[in-house]
Image (cartoon, rainbow over all chains, first blue to last red; front, side, top):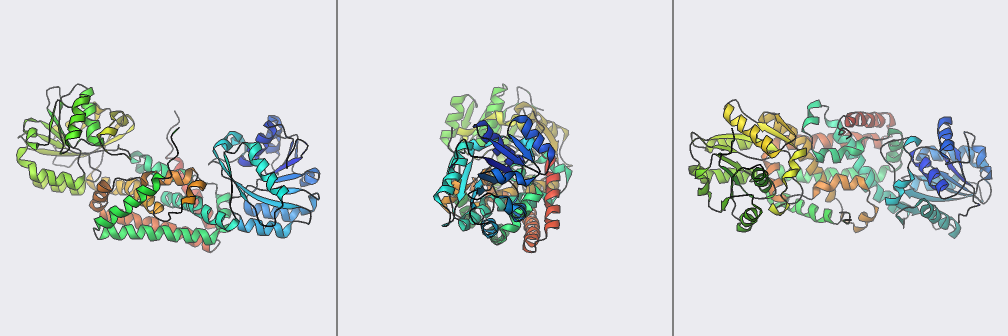
Length: 284
Length: 284
């Protein structure tokens, strides 16, 4: 339950944390920013996105809602070091893209009287840093709440309030296992592919002969290596299973090509075409 | 050398052949259309893109320039059956996306006095059929001329004229080996990836949790199975080598994830990011 008296802290004023602060500020809420980078605090203050900010985590002692916009492992480390600063009754939330590891570790660390509700705003872009913050990106994005059976109604309602205040397009619910399995496929596997594709060749002449296909498949090869290393390792089992699935499918197609098996090749292409059609965005 | 007296035939009035006929007609040239599908002829005639059309290939006997917009193997079969219809001095060109097989087979089949100049307009889209023809697509596209040491100046000039009349963005030259190697990577491998990715799972819930990454990587999974089966088989050696390259790169990343090798993982991501930057289109 968020109301205008709720004191909100955003930990980590990067692309996503900055956009959160901006969105809350524009909706009339008071936000406190915590970041080790003084220039990020300075920028957020100049823009009017935070009413106060500091590198000192003690500032969260007065806050009712603390939202971490840190990378997954960094988030866990941060809570380990600062758990004594949470006030009793506070709610902690996050933005991380992997959930099993984060939920189990954070719940293990938090003092009694502080509740963690995990959420995954499916937003972000290739750039990093608060200079690229833009809360208007949330209007097209999905907000996933990854609650556990131990979460209170109050915490779940708070997560829904975050999504509504920030203007997310849709709220959905997944448990942590489902979340990590699905994200391992639709997001992480795609990033492994894009990076792998770019790493095959550095022939500069390729640029001249590249069409939209290659550009589309490698757009996300422009990747934040600090964040994605944490995401990949934190979802190791699912991601490795998905890499193996893709290699198996490519090996199947390779075999068709090798053996001139046109019938099977066409069948694979038709199945892909049919399935892909359902993913088309509705025409505006 | 194309001038307003040049009689041009387009063989196969599909998406690309239709766009060729449209482009030539709009530039004031007279085009004859050949297609086994009477409704395609009819549509091209109604639109004013052809002055005459037929299912009967004998119509090409009066033509100076014959451009095949057929699929690669279909093109070879068509020339085998219709080579006696070419008039002496005629020039034959094409639009196929693979070149070694096409050039060697067509040159083997053509009668003396008819010259083949291979070209690859890097255009097209996911839809098929003349209903989707649109010559304005050429304005952003690259036109590759794949000449051999045996091509005459006249034939090469004719290919350049085609690109200029149709308004292609850029003309470039590759030999057939280079062409097939580059296309195997920037185009065909990408299509194998997209199809393979779609074939991993048919869980309908994925749609709800899909962001732009997965959509971008699978856009081209909406694929014309007749055309792409011919392209894959006709470039077998290059495409299999590229599939093996991607599997090797993905296996490398898989190993890093398995072993928590963060340093190596970051290095792979940074290399991909750096290389990808060069592929960004210049901002308008």
